[in-house]
Length: 208
Image: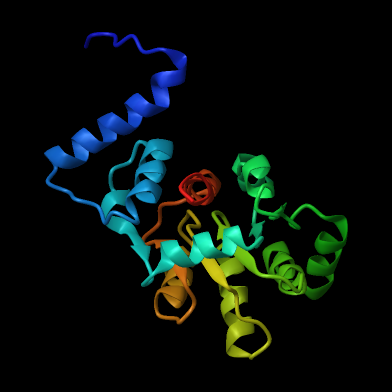
């Protein structure tokens, strides 16, 4: 294979051109609104399976952008996802990113109640009393906890990005929101991760 010399500030642009070319060769045409998000996920993972497994509720992109523009905060389930989100760009709309997973009091409460830190973290997020976009890339129990709060009438999230990765309860947790009325962006199946959650948030922010 030949080495392609690309200027540093052109690498991302060139990467997206390659993604577009390869999707075209596969005969895949992405929805125009969803395209920037799906392509950024592919760019982050180099995995073209996402072109067929990414799921969006009706009007999801417009709803998420509306929330961001109105100052919605982002809650993640890992500090890795928090680190990957462009907080400076988000702050221009008044938003902040939160992750409660590493808080000592969250760990203590989770141990005392014999639940996961993700469960307690979602409860803390529900108490923020502001519009929140949940970006879940690691813990299916975070999605399950959000759904249980909905079922109990305690809290309904404004928007859910559900892309946890793994094998235990991952697919089932995602399906809960695929069958709900909550606006969502979800990757069906086992794939996902904190980097994917961050990529989705950034794609939304960059394309407002």
